[in-house]
Length: 130
Image (tube, rainbow, N blue to C red; front, side, top):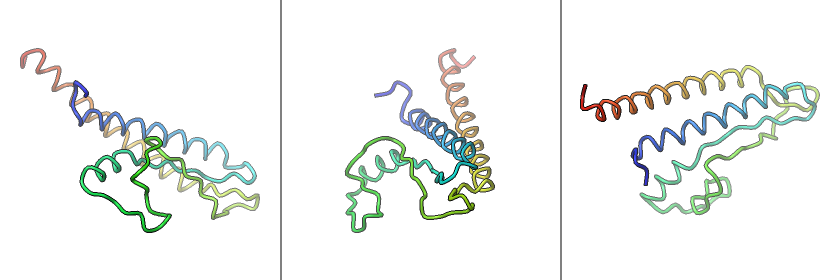
């Protein structure tokens, strides 16, 4: 049990996801000229699994569906091997990666702002409202 409550724990997981996603995007951009490199994406599934398993039981009818029964980690790194954008077998789309990087930065900043607000509220309570 966390002393800060569930919302701060969820923001912590979100920040961890933003970090992993940023690393994944950076690796994709760093390897955009590497022959036969396949772009990777980070997927955040732990909160989805927690909410889903608390509310209902999911039956997996297709192998492409998310398996709610097993939890390996908070994040999954998925390799997109079905496409090829460059003549050297590489499938990194620089424009898509830059858009994803911008979206991730906005997501990260929103979480940091919300976390600062939560800690500001706690600080106000500790000071007795002064």
